[in-house]
Image 1 (tube, rainbow, N blue to C red):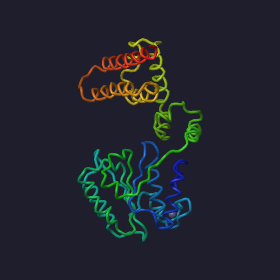
Image 2: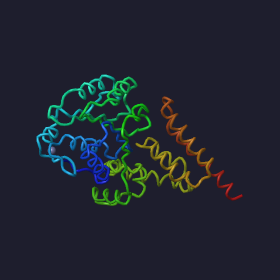
Image 3: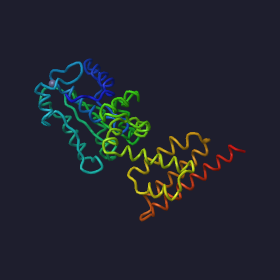
Length: 307
Ligand SMILES: [Zn+2]
């Protein structure tokens, strides 16, 4: 089977132990930040469940079931696809039909719902009954990067598997092995510990650009760089709002007193809202006023420290 990312292995082994004791729940939610490898985990779990010659570490990769699955032809595996941004009720009806059918390979049947938080209300309702009375031998694996968005009625009927990437020293080492150089120190924190997101930012050079942007902000807030210059260099950058959010939360606001922190973040949130709401907004002007307002909040704080 495809190599499972090292940080997913401990939880995968727990699942294996539950499968061999026939104690794995029939409905599971795999949740966690985007870029953790949740879909890989869902597929590895499905592979292990469907395999005719299951090994302690998962699917054998060689049996008839594994070969069918690798060819994308396993009749007892359903991975929901959705063309639109939402998973609609028709897709869930298809899933319900699948789960109530007979297994073609005389084993388990597995359905995977990627981006399960994007189910419409009608779709979630259509799924509830199947989750309440799961057909024998059938597993439903829901995957989400946005757990709070998943309907509470769905959550309460599933076993929870919040996936984690573990220790950041090990992840940095893994990233170094993939790219042949150590990742910048901020990167994993910026990606909320999600190694695959970090890897994609490293691969397309976005990590270097982020690093440069963070440096610009440091220079601006420490008074070494003029406002117009920082605005000119940052305006229109990809990932600008994520990068600013990270900088303000993790670096700038940390040492401030609580109310001042909240004020900084409120200014930032207003800027984010305006960026999506105001059509034809002058982005350079909006960024200028954001940075000016935050700097003035910081100066008030400094004045207070000195007094
Ligand atoms: Zn197999």
